Amino acid sequence: MPFTTLTSRMVEAQVMPGQTLFSQRGAMLAYRGDVRFTPSITGGQRGVMGMIGRRVAGEATPLMTVEGQGTVMFGHGGHHVQVIDLVGDTLYVESDRLLAFDGSLRQGTMFMGSQGGVMGMVRGQVTGQGLFTTTLEGHGSAAVMAHGGVIELPISPGRPVHVDPQAYVAHRGDVRNKLSTAIGWREMVGRGSGEAFQLELSGTGMVYVQASEEKL
Image: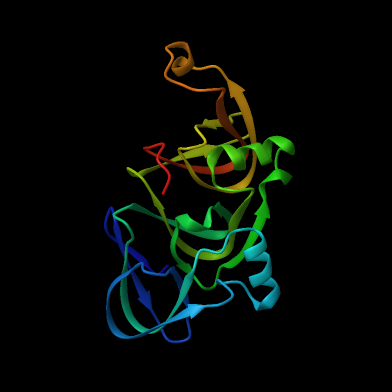
């Protein structure tokens, strides 16, 4: 796994010959060695169809290809950074939260409406994150960004996790998501507007929750 956590807001990646990393443009803070940075036209996906699918899905956050030999430090906007290691499973995360990730991971996009039907589409509207999400699958690591740090909550059969949609960062594993409505204490004391929403995640896996309702 290439990422080493330097601080809560910075990670360092080991770049080796024959290997590729992808990062958000502007995320490189410093580097040592013979490292090359080039714009990624396909955004980490293979071929023209991957590029088209990414743009149609609205998951077109500009990426850089990182290659060569050396070490690179990444960070962006002072956001907290969480390193997630994948061992053959799939990570679901909005593209603008991806700081950097292994080029060995297979990247794709998924229509969130396919999980939970219409409520899946409503989730995209409520969170402001769109109807699609980025998927990373395989063996490797990804560094994702969040406000105020991240906590990992396990999801197991019969024990779903309910998350404020604005605090949701990512999830992994065999997980279903469903948006439900509920009247909470904010509405009772007049601090909320409209209906309160909760994102229910069930199945087997992990959900990553940030300590803030602020968007990136």
